[in-house]
Image (spheres, rainbow, N blue to C red):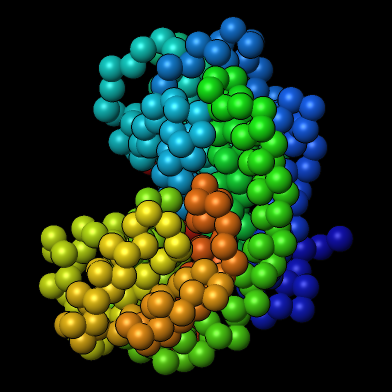
Length: 368
Ligand code: G6P
């Protein structure tokens, strides 16, 4: 039937809440317990080609480019293949020196973005295998690529991309598993990763329970004119994507930064009217991010911390704590982005903005 908001006030909110289902649809039929790997129907690459891959280029625009950054961490961690992430608009004119065994993935929700299409054509012309990670079936990029992987996330109507982003990150995790299993990753490690991936939709459903809490945070800060988003490692791209969501739909200036890099510039922006949103999962850099929080607090900046369930350590530093379930690092962006999507949404609503059709933006940009 017709696509409607299904009882939600906006498509964006509906699409945020659809994520447990869209993620299930993205992974359906793609987990292969027999060989402890992922499987894809349409890569169209020979086993020989697949094993010879020396380098992977991920390209895209906007949110899809952020998913590419997540993919870089995932593929390098699980498959140990060097990855470059390029803005499609830059890749096209950069003419980077590339060996023959370089594989290109164009990441695009719509499959119609002009910059991404142009980059794909240029790489194809140079003889590289080109693949699409795409949501819209039969779109131009899906057709022109040599092969690809569909997200199966369902139609995304809100201009600010939400469920497509989490499905892109999931496809890239599956690819990381796949390439890992063609190389160094053991059968046992593959099985363990599959188990983690299977639990992901339920974890995202749990993360969505923070909605009421995020709404109160939005009510407290919606009049601020600047925000910082800070995270490290797998959650550096999450910080960039969180900042982009806020910019796109609430027209508030926001910057995403690697948390430790903030002291080299952006900390100059901090005052009592500039909140910092920290992504703070447990892990090797936890204490360092806490120290970064301390630096912000010492300068009077309000702190909103997204932490893992049961983590009380940040509560003495943070003004607001939002809890999400703990997951393995390579899946964290998919869980940690949820409160940031909701924060952007509730702030935009509080400011009276047109959430689904923000000014100056289009769902897909078909000019270069
Ligand atoms: C536009 C949209 C963004 C999107 C970007 C790339 O700028 O407003 O939300 O991330 O294009 O779109 P694509 O369809 O290629 O993922």
